[in-house]
Length: 449
Ligand SMILES: [Fe+2]
Image (tube, rainbow, N blue to C red):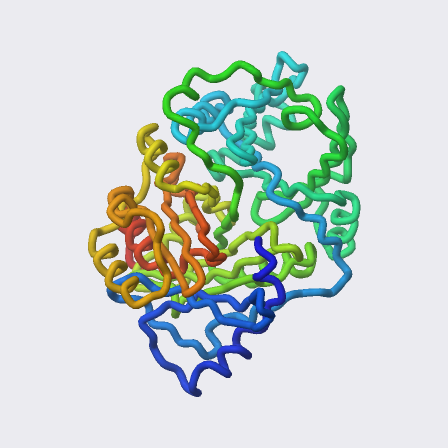
């Protein structure tokens, strides 16, 4: 997160000075946020819709006020996402899928050979993106019950989203004061590589958040894990993909639960609203959603929170909620500094992405003629790879979305490259949702409400 995006103002206040009274429609979906520019003037960064029939945007009262929360009561000790733990039926095979398709490397393991008698965990990494896949080892027992129930209900899915923090005890203590439900009190884990402090609280649905403070730890993952030093042969399949960090993790929630989840992040973790869109801005002919992005005080960690909104057909968010059995992680955005390279080789590895109609690019090229934004990448290559572009006058982002990573239409991934643009691709939401709806229809789930 750049320093420029600090110092947010209530968007509705600024828009009131920029827009005439009354509601109106605009060809641009203003997925904007207010930022303090390097010249110390506040500016609005609109995110322009690239669709031929962009969603109607009503400026007045549609955007949630975005503001910095400087209560001073919370320790801003968040540094990044640390890792994500998945509960899966077969950790060895799940890890191998991400190694083969996404180009991750195996880095650590815990199981019977490391005296972990109940759970086998395979840890993979690319850049700083770390995924841990855990499976139960025994026919019965406490962990077999926990993992088994999670898989029974949700299928393979993200169980814990862990943040790297500088003050595990402080963040945990504040969260508990503010009504968090404890999963694990701050616990010191040690081995020959050093010490890690870790604590966990309940987040939403069956998903938890952990706070990981790597005091002096030099090991491959966490104490108790054995390093995997042998390179997987599939690593030679393509050049390194170049995914480098988790940009954001999105969660889906049942209707009318988004606001309470956002308030939980504000109250319990001291986070603030960073960006939002509602169903008047983000909708297709058939379905719509509402989304609020929450971020920690330093805005190093960002988590969009979605809920479905009523439309003619079932929202893709509703489809997720029904198949996941409630709230859960919908997609993880993996950042790269070279999306053309990354997507080219992900496709070579058999990674499946959503496809975008050529009309999207025809329209985009026309709109870019009237914008100061210059896309450095070759447009024909972006089109060939189905990479989406969202932009404003100061920068742009490139993004693409995979198909679900398991049989249930639940978790999927985004690959994202940012060129000075800190939005979330709202200008692409309509095209993205239409692409998802084509798959949703294939699944027999684009049904009447
Ligand atoms: Fe995203």
